[in-house]
Image (cartoon, rainbow, N blue to C red; front, side, top):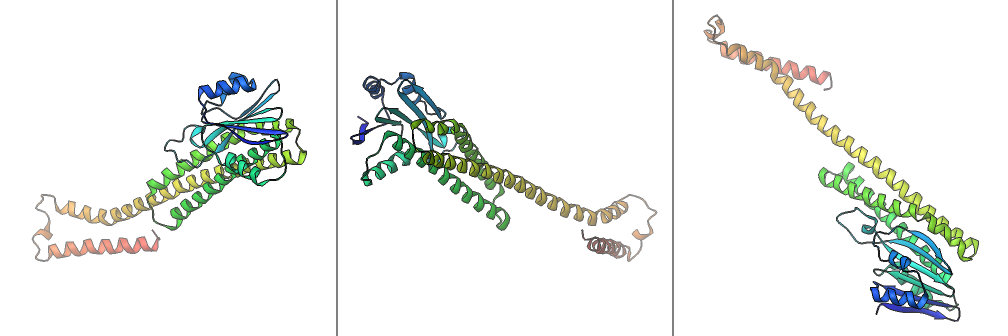
Length: 299
């Protein structure tokens, strides 16, 4: 049974439920009288962050950034996992689908602490660690973006592969920004827990910092994609320029070859002993003059 009492003292009990079954949720409903609709929200993998209050039950649904690599970045569940936090008097209940860093780290800190705590403090501790998971993700994405930028401008790499990496990076950053933006209301509701103002302000400041980091990252990625496409267009234009210059070299001699390819007898050069060499010389002279002209014009 995945229901586990992680922490207990005279004024606090922490019950954790990992990957719950319907029987587990039924037990939680009957034991703690939690609304089934709130429990069902914890089962939806794509549910957005929110805060609800039902009688003496305060319910926070937060999402934590995960390190799992998904091929298709279409929904918020591809970059994050949800954690349901129920606060009932002196009891805190957490429900989640998979192991999360915030749960593991909070458990570790409580085991090392000698002071008694409250459910509200545990919820705040987890919220701070959840925000830290997004902070770590923003740093990781920024490092990836810097590496891609170096490869684009300093190395000769596969452009098709780079644009795919940039697109994936943009998708991940956008989904993280969406989660953080929607989490704003739930973060603001921590002021209802009777915590110290400084503690709530720390959480809000951390949330604002992470939102600002991802906003900056989104702008940087968009600018990098624009610069990458401009660089690709510049290289394509350079190739077309070289081809155009070669066509300028061969256009006059192609015209001469076309004239002498006509079937007319009134061409004295055809009967001249040196006519062939004179014609080749004229073609070479035209190419040389064209080359000199192009160099002077810095084409």
